[in-house]
Length: 124
Image (cartoon, rainbow, N blue to C red; front, side, top):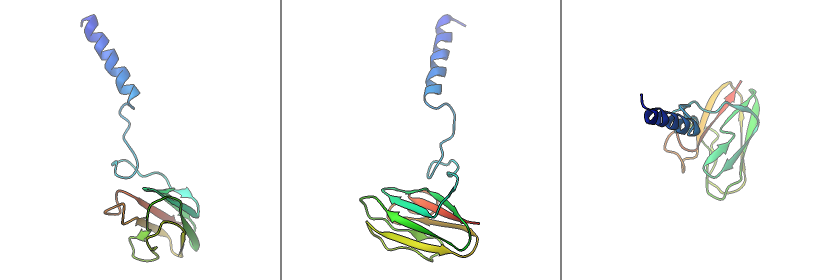
């Protein structure tokens, strides 16, 4: 192999490492794994995301969503229960009595419960 070919292989390796190598993307819409749940009873509704995206609580606990962005959003649950209205400011609360995973989304910024502005509450 010529010195020129070896040089190009080294350059390509450095570029691949600088660009993140082969680590798979993560998060909504990336095909990667969702972020791990955060033990919390508070979720911020910010522009284009819920923070944290996945919350973990105990049965009988409530979660409060607080609007902090400048755009309209809503919290709409897959099970059809306890959803919020569309708004720019304020809070919304839902109490979860039974265990399970409760997926939700903003219907303005997502077309399904798998991508876009989505979240979940994991009740233990």
